[in-house]
Length: 263
Image (cartoon, rainbow, N blue to C red; front, side):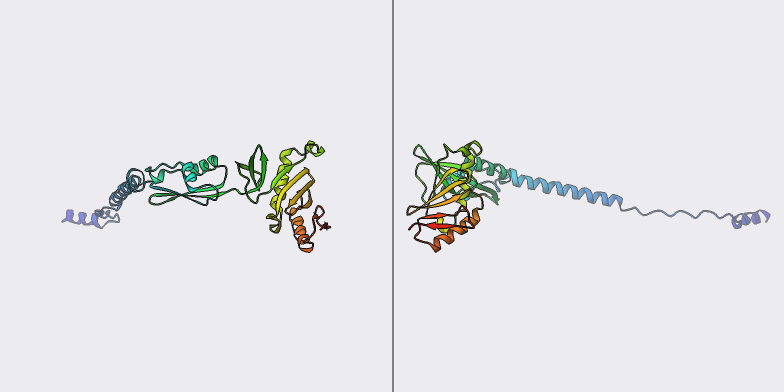
């Protein structure tokens, strides 16, 4: 009896027995890991399939190259200069390299854009330089655009493009302004000529940096002066031609005081 009482006291004493531990349910870690592994495998398979479709299959390969935007050049010339091989994967075409090759091979081109046209094409969009002046030499004509770039030499004078007459051999200004600078000034003047005059402009004569004149159809001449204030001079010349249509000589070298005479 005493032993039984002692045992009970032990169970009822102030010291509590620790509760029995319950078994934990398996966490989400293993399942999440398997899911991530499956997703990684699927992504790798899809990526491999995409790479194969782009580079290894016969589905997405270059079958056609087309060019647009030409004026003097032909589309065939542009396509040949682009040198995009047929049958290669379309994704492997380096569009920047093709555009750079076009500009290097064809100086007449001012801009060149190259785009892939899925699933089988390459499109070449170009723009050509337009001459604002021509330079005659040995029966050939060098074409110069409004940026001063001499981009082509042709055997036949382009219609409607004025001739540059550089008569500055004895000019003292050559010491300060070389012939290349004078040609650049002539280009600037030719580009500034008003639209109403452009079709009548036959030549731009340069005697020195500040002695540039225009030769128009009908034996008319225009004293332009330097290439400065071109917009103001163009407006003054347009107003003079309207006010004195029969005049033969015009002076807009000082655009605030233009003058017309003759006729």
